[in-house]
Image (tube, rainbow, N blue to C red; front, side, top):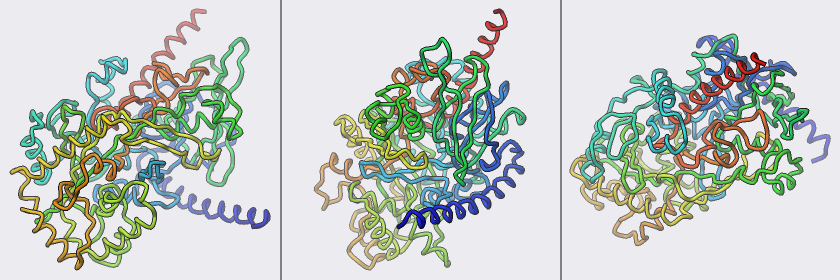
Length: 600
């Protein structure tokens, strides 16, 4: 294609995207007014140059509570590359949970990526971040995790309570989840801890961010607590780099602002107000976004930056290193009776380093009848959808688009009734296996290359094996018997009748009579994500205990990229808490510094 044709194509593409975003902006504006978010605007309406006390990059699970807190006393700008979660039923409705993850359109709240390990994953692209996409389970980190992090225990508890008052509910537990709970106890995962938000060994019912009507509440809701005159939020704003200046008398570069682009490609410059060391740029762009943006801005391994033609601001080898994803292995358990929809509500916290959870109701909002049924079924690869169960039978590096289409074809042939039931899953504490993030290009819109190295550490494999063995005990427990077939023969007959074929690659219990694979191999071949990836900007390496980026000034990272291990069984509670916690800490530091400046 000639340069002229490429230029015209680029203009057409920008115009189309601009039109789409104009429609999106209109909807966003209406929704913003509905929720009294007058401070939320589209990036195309941003001035070319502006000034703030704090610039937060990433309006996600940590960024929203952080922005709401800092706005209590300072002028804050929050930049989010996605749109609003409100008005999108794929985000707001529990019954359409899988659809947001299956949506691969340019304006989807989930941006799909495939790790170098071959595992399909997703990163959030919406105000509210991962809280708009996850299964909703809410549980705190353990007290040991809090101590190891060096956090103030009282302030941590106060921050958790602030989060919980806004958007945490006690779930109604349907029969399938009750049977799972009793099965876990029967399988020896004791004691019975009832309903609790604390992370304790045994079996418990946790909190949820879905209310009794099945409506999701997200981290974006925290912005209702923000000071409306001190906070500005720009949506569809993609930050391409952090700006630095050399302050007189200081050896370290000082962050002075950021550059972001709107959907039409127009660049906007935002600067920190001149006010000494009190004003800051804060990255809350997540495990993929924060290391990526640091490297794009010249902070990272020098050789890697030079490879992409990026001038090094600070040679920091730890950026993008130590990235991990809690490996998840799920077992689809078909039920002879109908099963109600439920997302994660019950968890078994074992003493051998594995967590057991479950979700039920296989269709997750896919209509069983009508004109939309085939279309939705053909594209639904959201987590825990039946098609994802099919991918779980294929080794990671073989999960190609062709394999996905094959799974879709199998699903079309099968009677939907054959997929009544649910998934029981286990995931690994930690994990001990880690990988890294690297730039593919200097395009801030593109996903970086991510390698998780699932199960590289043999201790993770052994934890998985013990977790699968625990699932086997649950499935064969007396408590869970009404939701399982009495034997494999009856189950196979049901599938063959539905499929009209002997071929049904369903992810069932690994100890099938014809399955000779050892459980270690089963763990490796059926590994999937549970979206709990973390690391890349570790505390004690890339950032210090106050989350300041080492080697520069005026820059912090506050999100899951700072975690060495994923907290609790599910991290969202702690990521939200961290946003509130650090917001309070930063405000306290600001007033201490202001008092010192006033004295001088």
